[in-house]
Length: 289
Image 1 (cartoon, rainbow, N blue to C red):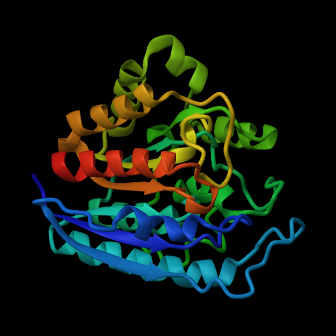
Image 2 (cartoon, rainbow, N blue to C red; image 1 turned 135 degrees about the vertical axis):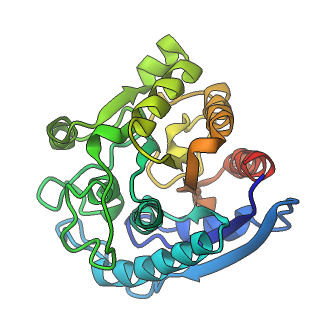
């Protein structure tokens, strides 16, 4: 077992919907774990949050300030030989957490467990919400304006895998194809089983690399089961499949260098359904990796 530091990355600047910034603190209330060493808390400046759909760079300056602080926090955790587990917050924060990990590990693959591809560019984005761009930024496909604080390698699209994709913009699909990212859809998970899909995803991510970064977005789960997310997408994976993905990650924990659990939005939750799921996932991770 590794010593784990959790970073509560409390921001929702990457999405017009409010609430995801409240998620991390909700999930870590009274949290215990024998290998949990500390909980860091970072808060973004949410005053005068920009929401205009036509503004393709909404909250960019504030988000970059937050991400630079998160990036340096993750670097410090890795330098102390602890495992960084970042809780969001919206998915744009992973630009910082994932790039910090590859800064120290040099060559990593990445598995993006998400209903969305998050592979837009500032030219292809429809909403202008930056949480629709982070995987493209992490791969260096859309790094301008978003990664100036990073001074290391980017992830290779050939070692990049989206698991659970189903709500992906048409131009974003073209970006994913152009870059060479592997996408396993929700339908394929239902057909083949989550265990088989995750085994393939891990092989791709770890092919010729030092290991992998995992970013788990709760909106991959069907909103009927898991409603407390900012951008729900119908026809998602079921709860058994959601936990099977975590089991596969734990099974391959020797290859795991860093992990995110993001997009829990307490303001959208119903009867704490999503909170219970997210806490179950979080406890499983801190007790088994």
